[in-house]
Image (tube, rainbow, N blue to C red; front, side, top):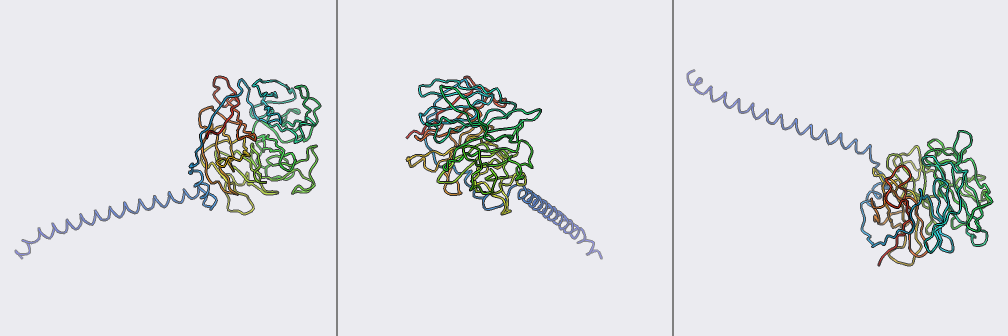
Length: 401
């Protein structure tokens, strides 16, 4: 018994050490479980926030690749404008410019600004007003000029497309081509272009009413295709309808390359898009709010800003023999205050570069000539920017080699 009493303290010491080791091991495994649980929870939430389609992965790669660099010369060619919204280049290389409050101006080759119209019928409120402009393919002979603008009827705002005759530096003989398009203080779309098919293409927004984009009985939130006199082409994808594609929120840029039609489109809370347009296809809005869907009935964009806001407006390709500039798509960003160049191959973005960022403020119109130059407009007097000296401006962007 005395011997046992002699070794008893030793036993308690060992038991205490074992208990201490057990507590330490228990604490370690508890900590490990907490870390693993947090990781799993975070992963699940991340997967919910970011789509997992193959297109998304390709898009994220293309967004991070900015490995094509060219030096650019930036020249201010006009200033003192008020929210210049769109630019059309005449066969004589003069620039026709719309200003959202309702003016149309010409920038002559010698740098003079001439006012050719003050359209009193334009209703300019917030995003609405005089927006798109297009010159007829046979402009040299018929002098036809097309405008997209907002107007008031009672207490409601609508948009229309009208054709004017340009003569002696004035616009006259308005002929309404398309009337009663949905309108409002936001999401009016507004870009006009004649395509390679000689048809008039029109971008319309949902006017703040999301459901219009999916409604085939409404022309809101659509890409439209018309003959030059406003009649519906017999080969449109929906017989008897001007609708070419639908499910758009607020498309604002349009151009063609290698026979393919591309548009830029404002997303909701970022998630802006560059889309390749196909006939009678659904581009998802407002069902798809974050660019990508695994549902095959919706078309995914070829480029998405993800959680960065571009607020893309004008878009243009340049036709050039300069090897480094082939397949180049340019688009401007309002809130993003940027001018981007993306190299397109089929449905894929091969590379991108940021030409301008936070230098001239909000950028809106983008139009390219046949000499490799791009003309863009600032939009710092639109109520959402900070005007700089001389705003708003037209900038000429030219490559330097």
